Length: 288
Image 1 (cartoon, helix red, strand yellow):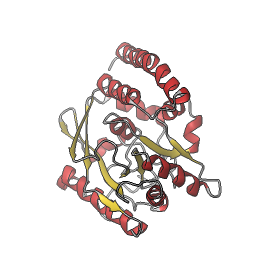
Image 2 (cartoon, rainbow, N blue to C red):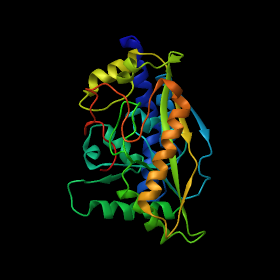
Image 3 (cartoon, helix red, strand yellow):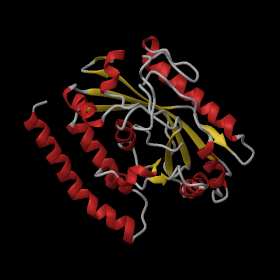
Image 4 (cartoon, rainbow, N blue to C red):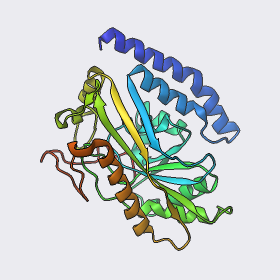
């Protein structure tokens, strides 16, 4: 992509934001409305402008059905791909609220921020998540707690899955909340299967610098993202939180394997990957 083409796309994205953000912000602040269609439109505009094609399979939660989505995490692009599907909110580390541009976008998405350095933060955010769920919203949690290179799946953390139990206190319809496994993969680029050597151009993990990564993303060509809604896991008052989290992890692993097939060996707790592909805090958009 030439510099002129990139500039025009960024201007178009900025114009889209300028049109949809003010009324969305007013609706949130003055009318107390949930996150509506504005973030979805913005994400779809980004995907269209930068040639990212998103497909999905499986059965997502019905509108108004409370669901805590437990997803794997590969890149910042996950948020845009998942956010383009329907209104929902994410859980993110508190540092993101102060990031230029990204912090503003996260706020408009009604992101729940967790301060991992503050004692009791997990309990506070769990209660906030529980309230959202009890109102019939979708809350997305990147349950690994960090990003990976797309060929590995780290153990899912169960600490914030307790939000499902908090939701039961305010969810009066059927006494259960849906835990929704979700797998996001990037199987093809320029119409061809993504090779291991190409994954750093899509995945953002470890100590990777953002600017070179974004440059590689822009010049690399069209990307296909595929999202799999796995088999839901009912969460009731007596459900074991850790067992339910482990079941969601297994479901996400199966879904990833069904998409990438034999091109990626995803194993329990770790996967075959370059020795220097360490995971770090840089790409972490979820809670520890």
